[in-house]
Image 1 (tube, rainbow, N blue to C red):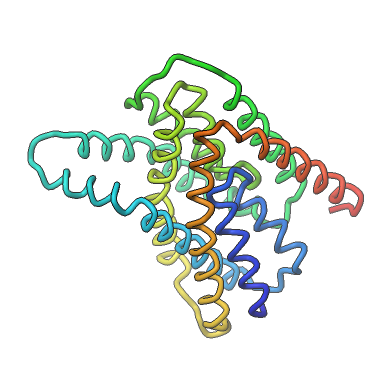
Image 2 (tube, rainbow, N blue to C red):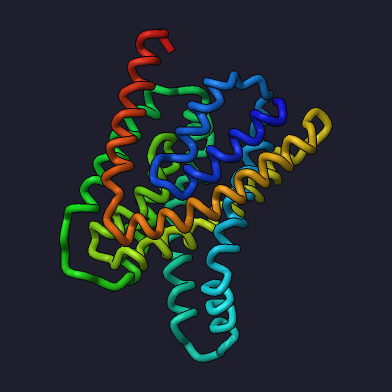
Length: 266
């Protein structure tokens, strides 16, 4: 993998991790377009690096919120920080269970299966469009809602379903305030990303022997920087009810790659 490819894939990851157009789906599309000549272990290593970059960009963007949460946790009395942390833990349960039980089947889906990606982009489009126009009575995030949002996050493991788009849209459809939905969606994924990275490292280890360290660094930096911009942009779009633009995008991209796959017999 040359340096330009590393930068481009980093930009794709940074933008699509936060924008509701599916990072996993676009990474699969990008690999097919650029020509994926990496071995399974090399591809896994590069994916871990890119995901760690977007996780750190999330931490950096929400640093004040996270510091407030951690400082509140030091208080022995049960408070908002303890309650929010419990909500995050509850939201993690479905994704952790799905990841542990169906890991092999999930990994097999990330192998250039563009028809699946296209179909899942259609689902993302429907969720985004619905969330912009459905008006429900406002609710607070409670234990039940956090578990439901966590279920959606677990389903969003499928390539083509946007994790941020699906979780934010589902939270809004439930009745959660738009800004709170975006904040909860972005923070809830941080422990999932790091947990998934640690598990992958324990299962497969790290092998830098056949990988250019500069390529990894360029991919990390480009994903981190674009992730910061995309996170800020996404929150503004959610507050202004502009997600339907991305639903149109998902429909167009999904249709193109399904047609492309059928035409080329992929």
